[in-house]
Length: 217
Image 1 (cartoon, rainbow, N blue to C red):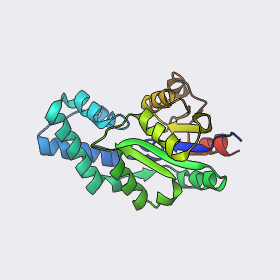
Image 2 (cartoon, rainbow, N blue to C red; image 1 turned 45 degrees about the horizontal axis):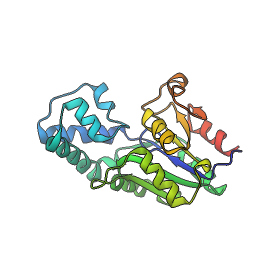
Image 3 (cartoon, helix red, strand yellow; image 1 turned 180 degrees about the vertical axis):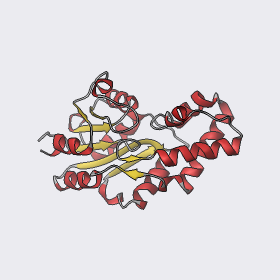
Image 4 (tube, one colour; image 1 turned 90 degrees about the horizontal axis):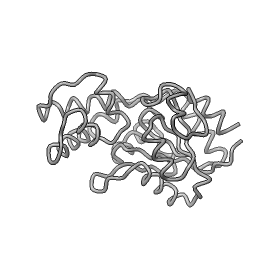
């Protein structure tokens, strides 16, 4: 068994398939702002990265138009999109086992904090995390800053923490924060072990059971 004390999870593509709610949030922003249609591949590219980055890349937005698109996206997410997700198999069991072993569990997501909290409340996960942090509209944060917040709140050293995530944004954030990283290939970013190993990682897992084996056995 490893010596990690703080286990930090990404949300989109790591804890849950949140793509239905994200895609519908994009469609809502398109409708409200009369934005052009984009390909399904472009739609899925919104899962994981910061929202402003995705809207700028796929719709060519900037300034006030970019901020408005992000606000419409969040509006739908908070009202409806937070219910349009599917937890990955065995996630609840993994969280229960980690906590039974005395581990601290946290979430660091580039999703709006309010949306993340509503997701966990809706799906009965609120009591399974010691720390939940997301991006606040008035004070945007990078992945590394979110991870640093988790470290500060937990009182753990960097050597005691690990991030589990499915994308390069997670890998880069972990490196910048100075903590270990476990990559998963069942989400929306990394599709193969080779994809993940482009970045420093202590393990690559194809499903939740492999995460459990690495962390708990």
